[in-house]
Structures are given as C-alpha cells and as structure tokens.
Length: 631
Image 1 (tube, one colour):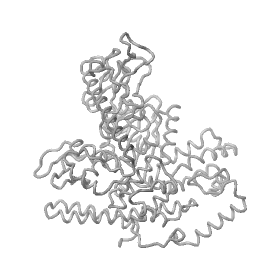
Image 2 (cartoon, rainbow, N blue to C red; image 1 turned 90 degrees about the horizontal axis):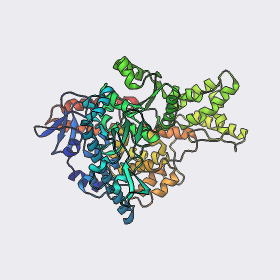
Image 3 (cartoon, helix red, strand yellow; image 1 turned 30 degrees about the horizontal axis):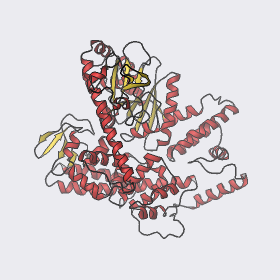
Image 4 (cartoon, one colour; image 1 turned 30 degrees about the vertical axis):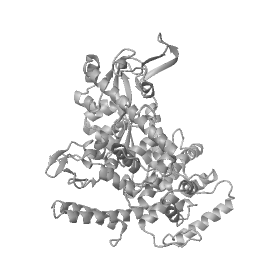
C-alpha cells in the first residue's frame, strides 16, 4: 500500500504530537515545551521534551527524537502503515487506498468501525471486572496469596468475574446485543430457547480472576480468566474474534514495552501469572503467549521492540516440547543481528517461584546463561540419535536439514553447517551434497535428484573456480538493461524486491529509516513491508503482478531489473551482504543529517552540542566498520 507524501504531510499538520505522546507519557509544562520521563530508557529525572510548536519530541538523555508517526513506530511497535492509519483514525482522515475499489474501501471502513466497537465493549467489561475485584475479598485474598500487590493489579488492570450466569447483564443495558457474543464475552446456544423464545445466553467467564489482554495500542481485545479454586479449565481465554487472535498477540507486551527496551531483551514465559509476578519482582520485560504455541507472528512482533528474545520454559518434557515449537517459529527470523536464547528452569520451579526462592540476581544470571539458539538447534537435531553409531548420525543429518534450512543466510548459518557436519562425522561439503540429493530447499545449495553426479560435481567445481577467481563480486545486471546512476536507496529497493527474505535481516531501525525516505523510495518500502506482513516472502514474479497500478510501479521495476534474481545460494548471500553495506551507508547519511540538525539547534539549546558529539561518534564508528571514512 503506497501512501502519498502529500497525505502524510497533511496528517502531521493535523495531529498534535503532544496528544500522541501524552497517551503514553505523563507530560508537564516546562517552559515553551512539555517534559516527561523518557519511555525509551530508564531515568528518574525528566529529560524527554515535546515541542508543540515544532511538533517534535527529543530526549536529551538517549537521543531519541522524531515526529508523531515516528513515536508510534518506536514506542508502540507499529509499522509505518499502522502508525499512519492509527493517526488518521484519530483525526477523521481517510487513508488514500487508490488500488482499492469503492466497495473494498467501504468494507474496510466497516471493518475498522466494527473493531473499534468491539474494543469499546471489551474495555467496558474490563472496567466492570476491575470494580468487582475491589468488592470481592475472596478474589483479593487469592491474589495476595500469590504475592501480588494492589499496585501491580492496577498496572495490569486485573479484575474478577463474579459467580452467576448473567453478571454482565448488569453492565450492558441490552444483554441480547449481538456484540456481546461477537466480542466473546457471552455464549449463545441457538438450539436452546428460553421462556421468551430467545436463544439462551450466559457469561463466558464466571468466578475467575480476569487478565485483560491489550494490543500494542493499549486497547482491550480479549481476556484470560483463571479459576480461584479447583476447576477446569484452569485458564480460559477469549475465543478468536475480529480483534483478537491468539497466534498474533502476546500478554503483557503493552505493559512491558518500555521495560523491554530498557532491559535490552524480552522474556517470553508460559502464563499470565508469570508475567504479572515477574513485573512485581523486577522483571517487567516479561510477556506470555496466550495458551498456544509460540508462532512466527509472535516472534516477529517481539523483534519490533528488541533484537534479543529469551524463551523461558519448565525443564520437564512439556517445557522441552514447547521450546522446540518456539525454535521452529524463531529460526526464519534469527538473523546475525538478533539473539534468541532458551532458558530451562528446574522442574519444581516456574519463573515466579524461582525468583522468590533464589532472588533477582540468581534469575538474572540464569537468563544470562540461557542456551543460545545455535546450541539448542544442534540439541534438537540430535534428539533420540545415538551419535556413536552410523545410523544415529544419519538420523541426525535427516533431522538437522529442515532446521538449518529454515535459518536465513548469514554468518550464523555458515558456522552451524560446520558444527552439524562435525557431529554427523561428515565434511561440510559432503553434508550439503547429501541434502542436495534429497531435494533443494530455499537457502540451500541447489542440485537435486535430477542432476547426475558428474554434472553436479562439474557445476560445483565451476562455481568454486569462479568464486576463487573473483576478488570482488561483479555488478549483476539483467540482460538488455543499461545501468544508470543509481543511489543507495535505489539499490536497496532492487535488492529487497529481488530477495524479499532479506527484509528480516534488517533491524527495526532499518525498517523505520527506509519507510521515512522521501518518495519514491519510502512508499515502495512501505508497500513491500505490507506485502510481507500480509502474504509473506514472494518471488519477484508475484511482486511484479502486485505492483501493477502502483504509483511508483515503473521506478520499482527499473530497480528490480538491475538485480539478477539469485539462482545459487552464494548469490543470495552476496546480495544480503551488499544490502547490509548499503544500509550502513544510508545510516551514515542519516546521521550526517542529524549532525547538521543538532548544530542548527545548538544556537538556541547548547545541549544540542552534546547530542552532536554523540551522533558524530556513532557515524565515525560506522565509517570505521566499513573501512571507508570518505562515504
């Protein structure tokens, strides 16, 4: 979806950055600006400034700065398109959707209205449950018995669903309202009729501690309910609704987003109570999956807030099985710039009990010593394999293939092939050839059963000779096209269209930088991000069809055609490496612009000189990294 820059500018002219930031940060008047505690790093004295005249926020402590769109992307973890849509909804503007028919736009508008209405219903229920908690000594005693304070219950909005089949009838004037069923708060039995001839209804949640589930914008989208005494199920979740999907949402992410940035990692636990208890005990960076296995959507959402994730599981068989599912979800997103670890606690402990028994420092040390993804991958590949026998090693080779193949190309993947080959007692090239003969996979060397061994050996020999002869990768061009003077942003467009999987090799900061570029680059990157979120990685042929009618179609196609689509894994690796270098140079250009801005502002604010020096140090470090001070 391409959003015209004219609309972006009109949107920023209409919104007030003070209102946007004020939804998340408590601001107080401080001269011409407003001040508050920075949401991007921990601090005790306010250094976070919001300017109503310049419509700009800036932290003098950590250097975070930007406009209303940037704030939602950085703090709420939204994509560029999500942030624009959120602000447009607040201001009553309609985001241009030129590629959609009027009927599609009308349906989209109705869907947005329905979602807003459902979250209103759920928020009203959450408020009612919170009031019930205050007048239910039994529920309060249960929470106190679990070691929770009133303050932490307030932070997470905990509540109590009272006993009785129709308690919500006293909250909502019309208990027959279809929205109560659609939101998941009420269950309706159409085959059972009451005395009034209407289908029988009753509350889904009864006599349970209630945990409101919020999206990254802070809207209530569902609930988790826990029994106070014995009963089944112990935990009951809201059903799938238009606003709630267990496979995409994480409990505690809204409440813990700032703590995740401060701690530098997200801790994924198994239950609601773990999240709340850990927040009280000093680990407010914890989140939990919602009664389902970890999914790639969960992992992708976490990587919007941090580049480090630690999964915490019980050390029993069930915990190991859950960890294996988390491994499968994390592998396609485990780029060289990200860290994924697995923490296994003793069988008698969950995170809450472990911290209470051993202290914060002991738990922090366990997190530090958690099993890296690379080691857990090898452990998973060798499960149930007797490595002292040829048969066991052969089985490990078979089990390792899909795990290794799921990793994105990079240094981690290249190192792991060597470690796996050592464990299997094969040479790395022999192992790759073995996997080739079993059928090609994306990210693995192609060969396959259709290639006779002699032809495969000749192809591999020719490819190796070519790589050894070339001191630098040649510029790859599509036949029949002459290459003009292309900018670094042009090249990034071409590389990402040719290899969309490389998008996940970039950090959240890289995504934001690309989306904020001026047209045509920014709109193309935003469109590509939308395609990846909705459809996943697609080959160029599919992307080419999706581009038809796009306002920057010709530009995007011209850049993609400058890149020969990879047919060998080394070509993909080279293009990812080239993309990383292009991004480094784009970041350097961005930092130079920020330096100029800081110098310009220093006449009114001398503290900008310190910011200038910090930015300059970052730029020089990047220049040193690529060995080219004259970028």
